[in-house]
Image (cartoon, rainbow over all chains, first blue to last red; front, side):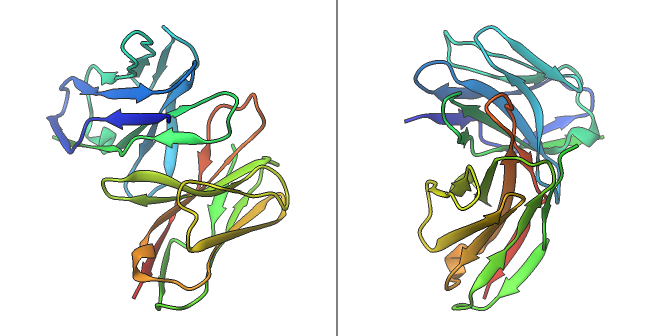
Length: 112
Length: 113
């Protein structure tokens, strides 16, 4: 079945460091891919998405490219801030199905 | 912006109690979902609904039921709460086929003692 695997955390970085959170998926066909972010005490918010191969999603300085050849959707940011500290979830959805599949989440801690 | 409101942020219930978790969305979305979030396991789908009075089991429906009598409201029911149902519960909604993302509520942290 469909599934998402993302790197285990926590990831601890200093402010202005480069961030990569790896995400790979298993799915038939051509799913849409998403990154969600959960700040402490809150629900999940959509961060960015990509709906077809080679699309790049971007938002708030974060980017991820839909790589069908490697079944990956890694999240990157060139310079993280303390305010980026949160849990990040990678997810996929098949366009003809109603449900999402989420990864287990990666906690990011950014230190000043 | 779509708003998804969960009635309680924190709940403490006793083993064996019947527990109702309420979720309301204000954008006329057809689809609503209940997930539970546990450390190391991510989000797991309990139930979802794609229309009033319609429901579908997700991946972990055992011990739960749902109710959707009105389009805007989707309730999760724990018929007899158990300690292994201590978790963060997240409600989400989504519009029609052209709407890609979920909108999540802030979550209800349920502790069963």
